[in-house]
Image (cartoon, rainbow, N blue to C red; front, side, top):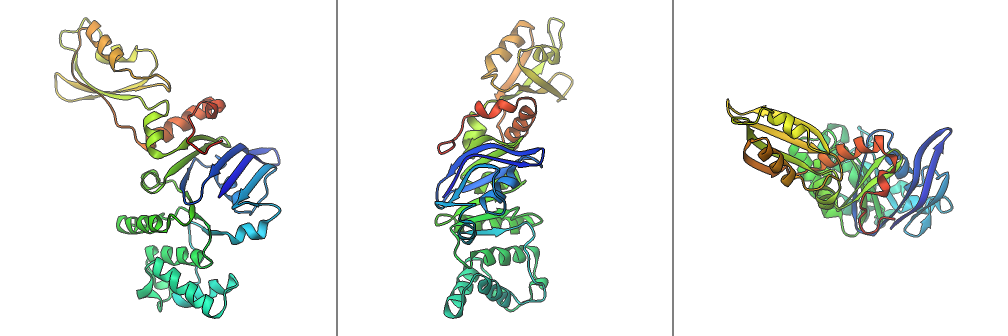
Amino acid sequence: MIELRDVQKHFGTVHAVRGVSLDVPAGQIVGILGPNGAGKTTTVRMIAGAIPPSSGSVRVSGLDSVRDTIEVRRAIGYLPESAPLYREMKVGDYLAHRAGLQGLRGTARRRAVDSAAEQCHLGEVMRRRTGQLSKGYRQRVGLASVLLHDPKLLILDEPTSGLDPEQIAETRGLIRALAGRRTMLLVSHILPEVERVCDRILLFARGRVQADGPPGTLMGELPGAGRYTVEASSAGSLGASAEMVFGALPGVESVEATPLNESWTRYLIAFAPSAGDQRESIALAARSANLLIRELRPQATTLEDVYLRLMAYAENDPGLSSRAAPAAGAA
């Protein structure tokens, strides 16, 4: 559905996107994450045909985003963070108006409105003004409006921003229900939401894709996932505190101590990327210092852990992308 080949984008002296290459198959839900200025929004705008690449090629459903811009835009449904609604219009009238802008007339327009309203569960609000709706319903109306022309590709920008937990769960279910026949790009800063909804995640930093893969792969296999919880006591130690012992281990980034009682302390030990399994080295260091350990376990890695580590690492090592293990389909 989407093919990018060595895509670059310059804005004057600013190098916003630096050689992004990737393939997105039809039907996949792809989450796009990254800090401000990472290049993700620029990449999405090039996919949508809103701006051309400075070099490289972007194709959507076999169409070139520059040469076939109009056809590419017709194949895409784009929902920004704040749905652009006419607040004085009734929901049904608004959807009919948007369908007309897509060139739908007569029976085709009525069918498109009915289908989009049904998919987004809008039946009970079709005669209400959009300005009277809750934020959750306004998001549904916005989503229905981009489904009217039955696009092959949906681009959703922060679709759950500002929603309460119940509305987030409803929107998440709606997005999953729309998957299958359509490809989706989901731009979001809500990491748990991306983890639950998306089949694949692209992490952008410094104008490049720094990591690419399913959420489980990124959390379980990407270098830099090593954090350990240790409960230890210095009673009977050979003079060195547990914090000093653990802090002296090769590759340690940080040691955080939380006292549990007068005898025991819980330590969170974080190792540098590529450190590998450190349980044995922690145990050996504790034994050498005569420290008592009653618990030693790897800490469950979250998408937020991976995100923060990769972003920090990318700032110091622009070549990280050449070492991150890409998922199948990444170039």
